[in-house]
Length: 570
Image 1 (tube, rainbow, N blue to C red):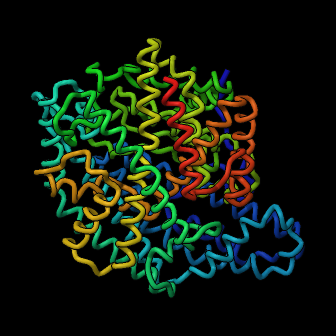
Image 2 (cartoon, rainbow, N blue to C red; image 1 turned 30 degrees about the vertical axis):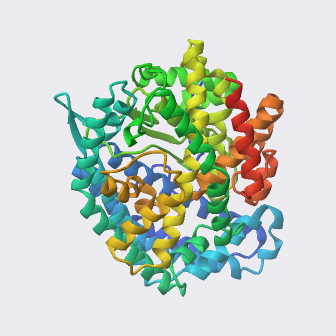
């Protein structure tokens, strides 16, 4: 039976300490800054105390962010988050730099376990190189500005059949078998998005300008190069991203084009339009895997538990602790995420479910992240638990695929189950060109940071053409296509965090291939990899999971052929 978990007893900060002012926090920062470290044991205790404070701070900010997103209309929640961003975070940054320098300068540094601390110290040294005091106010402003995207998006509502609905709920109509209704909703949604297009373009331009300034201050030519260092991309370079773009374009676009051709034929259409991409080709109504969040939770627990009982227990614990907010509702920011809570070690899943099959995938995906948090919960310090996205997304995307054999929990009807599997397999290949497009777009944006809005829209259209086989007819909707990138919140809130989905998707397909051959071994390797947190390089973590960290054209082709083979079995 799942039990509510408690955080470990604090040894540095007071048990009931509340972050309500910088004055209350400052003495603990001063303690760490001035403390003498006369032995390796004192150095390790100092690292642990710093880690405890990091966990407390990150969890406090996490709750402010989560609550603000759940109800963007509540000004007090927004003020609470912005208080942390404007009053606490800027004052932490100089201390963090001082702590990093203190650690690296310690005469006892060489006495630390080199293997245990290698990844951690590599990140610390990089952070020292990147730190510029003049960037603190800019980064604070950037953090506040990027949240405007969620506020703008959360206000987007459309009226369908007399009811005002969120964009997430409106999107469910693209599975409606009435083609006229699909077109009507497509137009409504995109006319609504167009109303905010200029505001979103202006916001993005302002973000680009400030991000470029951060890069220049840190002696980088552009923000892309700065972010590669800031994100700790030690294990691959920008050229590898370019190779990924090319591999996807060369090996996958033709496969996804074939999916579109088959869709057009089965729907018996002369022309495939943008609103025809999600409807069932046999004319069946949309899949209805669950009704309401309670059923989604219960079915997810059963599905996950059949892969491994531990996976289901993780979600049960989160449910008992109130760490799930799953339903779409007015005023709730778009998107879905699993937010790690490093002190208690029990994360929070946030999403906008409306009863669709896509919601099942989102839930299982975020559950993969959650399991990752649980498996790395007992690692010694907070930084060991903070995994790079290439690893985090391997956890989530692999979970999507290794649970597929148990989706009968959601789809007891065999035909519906096959339909769901087919749809997902086509989606996991179909999303890779979009990921490559978004990443290629970001590289161009920051390599050409003084571009005009018109040039930006033209560049996105050009990239879209490059990754399109021209099966879908967008005529009459050129402007809609030109601003399609605005739907991708990563561009606004977490720049350059997106290609990881593509890299991890390849890894996840390989994990699934292993699972099809030997389920027990594949799950064991998967869990072993997640338990490492970020104590090893990305390549070693993938190797521990039994797969390669590789995005060459030959590997992309090999994995795509495997998925095609599995599709052929349905």
